[in-house]
Amino acid sequence: MAELTAVLASTHHPFYLKATTAPAEERMPQADEWKRKVEAYRETLTAAEPDILVMVGADHFHQFFLDNYPTFMIGKQQKYDATFYNEEREFGIPKYVLDGDVDLSNFMHQGLLDEGFDFSFSHELKIDHSIICPIITVRPDADLPVVPIYTNIFAPPLPSPKRFWDLGRAIRKIIDAYPSDKKVAAIGTGHLSLELGGPLMFGEHGPDPEFDAQAIEWLSTGNIEAILENVTHESMAGSGNATHGFMDLILMMGIAGPENADYVDQLDLYHTREMFMTWYPNKNDKMAEAAARSAAGVGAVTGPMYAAKAGATA
Amino acid sequence: MSKYYVNKFLYTIDRDPEWVARYKEDPAATIDRWEKEVGIWLNSAEKTTWLSFTEEERRALIDYDYEWLFAYGAHFFLYLTLFIGLFADDWAEEKGPLSYQLEWARRLAPWIGKPYPSVAL
Image (cartoon, rainbow over all chains, first blue to last red; front, side):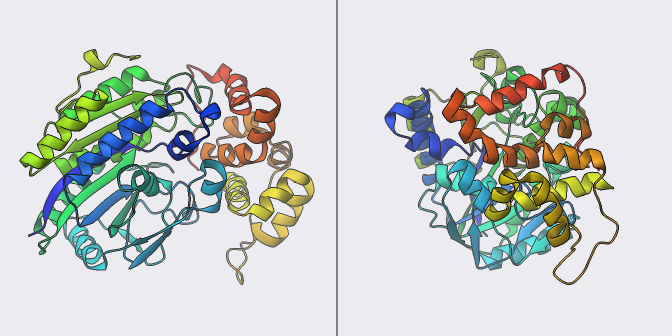
C-alpha cells in the first residue's frame, strides 16, 4: 500500500514570491525572515521524499463561477495548466504546467464516492494560486505529479467545519488503501483570520490575532473537539469575512488525524498571519532530524504551539 | 436576481485584459457593450433572456463604487481584485504603497463591529 509520508497545512500568501524577489530597496522589512521560514518549512516536505502530491485548495473565481460552483471537486488529468491572467497581473505569479497522476485521481474519486462524498470532477481544470502558492514555497521545482482537490470555502452556502474534517479523514483512508508502493504527501492551504474587501483588510496584523493563535494551537494539537465546539461559519465571519478558508486547514488536520503536529511555525505579517505546519504520519529519523534542524534555524517548534506562548500579537 | 448579474460582470471583466482596459477607459460604454456581447449570453449560442441591471447597480459599476457594492453584498473577492487591478498602481505611485486599499478600508470603517451584508445570493 502507498505510504502517506507527510501532511502539510499552511496559509497561502499570494504575495510571497513578489515580496521575496523584489529589489532590496522595495522589499518589505520581513521579506528575508519570511523567505528563511519558507525555505526551512520546505525541508520538512523534502525529508518525506514524496512521489505524488495530493493538493487541497479552492478556486478563487478563476475557473469556476456562480453559474456552476462545485462544492467539492477533483481534477483527473495527465497535465494541469496553472496561473490565470489576473493572478499574474496582481501577484506576479508565473505560469506552470504540472503533471497529474490519473491513476491516483481515479482511485481517489471512486474512494470518495464510496465514502459518501459525491465529488464533482474536471478533465479541464486549470489550477489557481491556492495550489501554485504551495508549489512555489515547498516544491519550487514543480517536479512531482499532483492530484488536485478543490473545496468551496468561498461562495455560500458552505459545507460545515465537520464536513471538512470528515472529508480529510476519508482522504486519509483512501491514500492508506491505495495499492501502490509510492510515497504520498498531502499539501493543503487555506487561511487563518482574513479580511478581503472590508474595513479590516490590509491592517498591521491579520484581522483577529487572538483567533490565529488559538487556531494554531487547535490544529497543532489535533484538537478537533475544540474546533467543532468553537468554530462555526458565523464565528469565522466574526474573525474576518474571508476566514472560512480555515476549513481547508481543518481538512488537512483530518488527513493527519487527531495528532500533535511535528513542525509548526508562524509569522505575523501585515494583512494576515502565515502558518506552516507538518505532520509525519509515519515519522522516521530522517524526518525528525529535518524538522529539528529547520525548527532550530527559524524559531519553529517540533510539536504543538500553544496560544499563550505564541501570543496574541507576537 | 441581478446581484448575480453584477457578479457576472465583475467576474468576466476581471479575467480578460481587454475588458479590464475598456472598463477603466470608459465604464458606462463598456457596461453597455458588455451586456450585448457577454452579459446576456450563457455560451456562444445560448442566451439568458431575463438578466439585467437595475439603475442603481449600473450606477455603482460606472462609479467603481465599492462602498455600495459592499453594502449590496456583491462578492468582495470579485470587485477587490478587479478594482486593485484598475487603480492600485496609480494610487501607489501618487500616494504610496497600498494607499488605494487602505483608503478603501478606511471608508468602510463604519461597518466595524457590525455584521457584514451577506454575499450569498
